[in-house]
Length: 532
Image 1 (cartoon, rainbow, N blue to C red):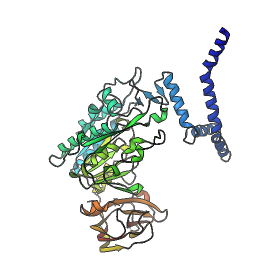
Image 2 (image 1 turned 120 degrees about the vertical axis):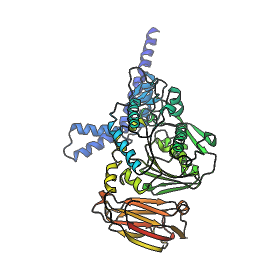
Image 3 (image 1 turned 90 degrees about the vertical axis):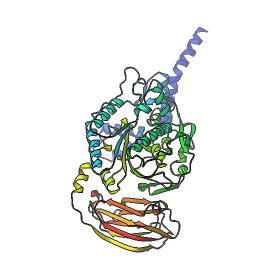
Image 4 (image 1 turned 45 degrees about the vertical axis):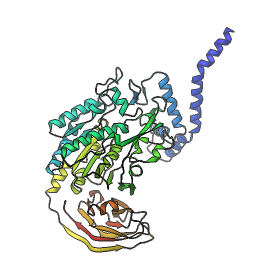
């Protein structure tokens, strides 16, 4: 009997290892095509040694092409959790079980210099600037940090904030409100993601409106920055965040998705130029992307982007019922997605630029050609080390450009011009050709009258006839523009398009869906211009 019991214990003790071996063998059989594909590919190329081959195979096994990858990630995370590990695949568990990735120490001097230069450039133009520091997923006292671990996110942020304030740059530091202690971090952050949740973003909304009211006394109303005017929604166990996707659903759990909707009437527009997309209607139709609150797809969806649908080079937000007429420009990272939705209920005009993706010019170029009433730049401590947020501000270039004389002259002018309806999805009018890189142009018209079809949007573009690509795109919501003084687009053709055959086109709708629409434009003018 004792011998049988010993044999059973031996079998049971080896069962997990056996199951793991079977799982690995199964994964290998299912994905044998990946190393075979790389072998065939390398056989036809020169200069690839054995190390290069193994690197390519390793990359293939880490890609989304790997059959059963998500199951393997889950199993790996489960094993790490069961064995008491505090780290898995570069992701760490805090003392409260929330996931994070520790920040290294950075020298903040280059970032301080860049932000100080931006503040000074805007001050010369009488445009108020505020740098907003969102919190990192770590309490200020670092009580969540396990023993023997180091995180320098708040240390980097402290150095930046201190230096900026010494340089007379306006700073709004949200960390003391949103991450003073472990309880605040648990309240305002997703446990498996690096972002704050909607409640954290709403607190930021409240604090930003307070600051803007101080910046422009009597001109800014924080009418909707009141949580009592909003309804909170929770979808249980729907969201596996950016860090959760790296370790699976068992290492840190799964988040409930949280989002807020207003209890007041809204009439909004969201314009995404690089997607050639215009969304108009109320808050739920414009700011909320309901597909992120639907079917559960832990690894396939990033449910954080239930607001705005993702990160884009430029977003243009318009509000026909805004209590504030001021124009805001927000330079942003992904923390701003829910914040933009809340701010849009307050302001008639908000343009948002993500420097990681924006390559149509410099940030100062955009500001100078589209003058806002105030500029906000909001980053979180994890993005302070990403130089993409600082290397395209263009402060020196803007100062030099302002002192350079520019030729001006009308290229085309019509008191009235009719673009007749067509079956062409790209129905357009060529306004100018041979546009020159580096030059600044302006397109304007006072109104656009729909003669046939449904004029829900308008688009203009700088188009390269050889490559059939857009250099620049501009979208308008006619309902908003007609009520706010007409249409205008000032733009600089990128220097990188030197040697291209560039035309300025005006569409009868949005390119790709402009068929069947006839439009009469009034007071249409195209000119090479200087900045306004």
